[in-house]
Length: 129
Image 1 (cartoon, rainbow, N blue to C red):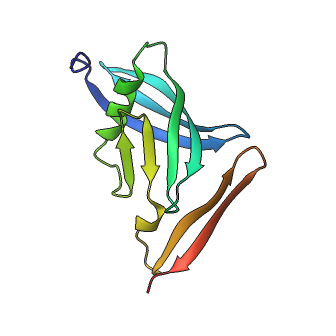
Image 2 (image 1 turned 180 degrees about the vertical axis):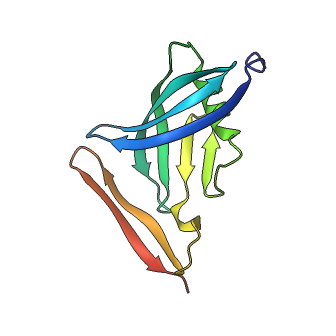
């Protein structure tokens, strides 16, 4: 693979924002001993099973010019990624399987509506049986 020479040591995320068109994941990335600001823009959508699909729209890593596939591969190699987050670097998507998030109260969540334009993000809460 032509991108294998890239050695990213660490990706840290600081904030997640949403406006009426997209979601922004903000963080920083260490690359070759330097720290670069990282901004990733996603289009969110609700899947039939209540999961959330984030489709990569745009990104920036400081002034570096990196391919989309490389950024997605770096995200997918994050060792701290929870089991309910699935990254498909080929499709440039992140699937968040909300129903698989573990908690002490035996509840699970499904996305009902994701409509950023009308400021509506609605989740349904269910008790496990």
